[in-house]
Image (cartoon, helix red, strand yellow):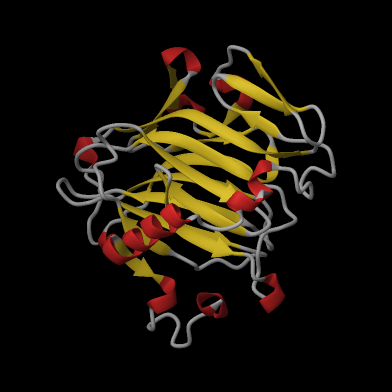
Length: 285
């Protein structure tokens, strides 16, 4: 019913109500694969961590070997230090379908030394995206690993930074607002050049004299319904992410969420009148 994959153990669901945990040594190669430019993906610490490399020849990326429908995905990332302008480090879920793509994005936008790192989130549902929001991180994400997570349930989607919610997108299908419910998604991470838009709208270009650029990943964790897999898993109300405690932000999360929005949000498509003279319907839901 429910699969949990990470570098140290695998969780399998034995019944609708009971979870059996079996620990085994594992490496990156057992659960993930290179999506492109595998020569720029390096395993470190015996396969428990990954280094992605960006140079003038190419960036790179990796993906999960399976797709999932609902659940939570997390990973720890240490971003490019120093002058990283023009680079994008991404962690996202994607249905890998063309015209009706579903996608949930973390995109970490590089900066000039001394400037804050911005994280952009975006949500594609039934092929419609353009729901960008940007938050300046309140710490230096290149000094140490921090945990980034996406919770995806029938009730809402929440993006977390170290357990601090920075974005919530509620399921308002009853109001004819698109929400991803039917397409399983794989989990991806990439490092690539995007100096036409990533830093100050493309004003700051990548400085190749600082290359190669490195980003590090570890403790990748997936808890969700694998597809293919038991067909009743995605609709099972006993999955922990569908529980009452996870159907909305709790009081502590709500306070942290407001703090982020007031103090660290730097862009919200809902308030961009140049793009949307009339805000999209989900901005009022």
